[in-house]
Length: 277
Image 1 (cartoon, rainbow, N blue to C red):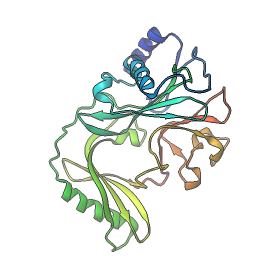
Image 2: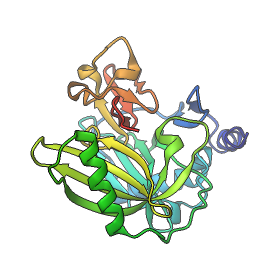
Image 3: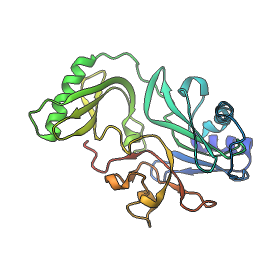
């Protein structure tokens, strides 16, 4: 119901918005502004201006996802300009200074600096403690043991990075409930088999919440724009992955074709099909 109300607000503010929702969870994943032309060419605005426009749009349009405070709920943006002259402003979701896993919104602007689409995901109404009861060193020991069990080796995998994050397990697993936890994210690397893993340990209880094969799925876990020519199954848009050749072709949300420029697609964060739990 809250997404429906936010959608009505968006229509009132923008007039021609189309909102797409995941069929299973009803989470919004794509907003298209129909009356904005997708004109390409040399960008007419600076990156700084693109960020200002994107923030202004999200101040209203972000309500579809449950975004309430652009300045405090989103991190510092990055701006990419593609070969068409389109600009893509990426915001990672933050909760009291901590990264929210899966929380990324990407605002797409045409060459005139007008917003014509937004895609991604956002976890609304987070309410978890931000102080860990379970310390990082113990979490790392658990992650080492977990990684050894996964790859069935006595070799000691390396801890590449450890940081405190907010982990919505339900979103990762495409479930209706967000199931949000404060977690230690431990990036592990095993230098014999040359495998990497992301191990998530509950920062309150020390239990393993999630283990993902490949800490950096698809090389970059953020929503992105890509050419779907590398899709593992061209007849199935949900398999349209820029990293299809790596064996990853499962999306939390389907990708969406751009009808104006055939072969030009918007993607969502993908997750390995062999998620480890």
